[in-house]
Image (cartoon, rainbow, N blue to C red; front, side):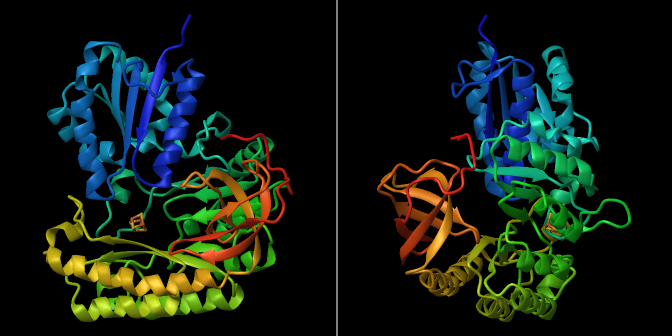
Length: 446
Ligand code: SF4
């Protein structure tokens, strides 16, 4: 008998992608199989993000488009993720044909929720605290070379612009043993690169004595872990012991995403970020003194309410001093229900112009940093074909995208030495030195 089929569409950050991998794993465990066809699917889940406006609007467009399928095969149409948690009333009112609305904290309960949703209209999942314990062995991992491992859920900060504490709830931490066990499982199934995930990983703890540096030490000690990354860090909580470990342990990648958000102490205070410009810059200096070749990336919000030209110039100053390898920048968009949403935003034109100036300021910095790799031979973990399809693509330990040619046929999830020939605006280009596998990672997942 043919298996029932499911389709999951995902928007948003890596945490949403991992949630979708967990939902897919659960459905496969229940006997479903994935399909790319909307017409064939009996279950369609839209996993969405509420952090910025775009993805949220997309979900309503998608729901309208999928509505006719409810007359055919489609038995359960669900909305999952942060936006679901936040907007459940709006979803059922604008799209009453939706069967299930479920936040990220309910992920463990998908089997019973699906069953209930077949008989009950407009089912709303409860907020739970066990999502952090999702069994790693069940995850249907979609990344070709990297295993994401949840270490915590939620966030107990109160950044004035952010909806995450409302949608994902307060911080809960996964016990160390459970994290180590998922890491070992991932290694056994062929992954050599592990990324620890959580909204605020630096606050992870297990009991009163184990903190983030202990976590890094323990996971980097798991045999077979060749690359260890983590995200997201918070400047207020990043421990310098972690930087020391990065310097000491060859398998902890020299890459750190350290969200800045603004370079102005006044705006940081309004954002409730719990650090100021000097604290942030001092942290960067201290990290660089311990890990001189570290690659830093950051998030910047432009046009936060109250941001003056002087405030923005301070952001440019930090960007120039911190010398990021990459910046993820956004124009501020208010999220309903957050404290900042009540304030008057900076005029759209002004925010757009500042955003462009930020990009213009960053470009020469990252270009210079990329050009410094020209002529060097670096280790790359192969992810697959490059975007253009004519080359191969992989990442260096410090998270640079490296496009390269090869006389051989490189296997996905293997490590190659690549000689860098030139730098583009966002990536490196080079030639593989060896075409044969240097350190087999695995049974290829791609
Ligand atoms: S640290 Fe701030 S921005 Fe990050 S998830 Fe928590 S509340 Fe949101």
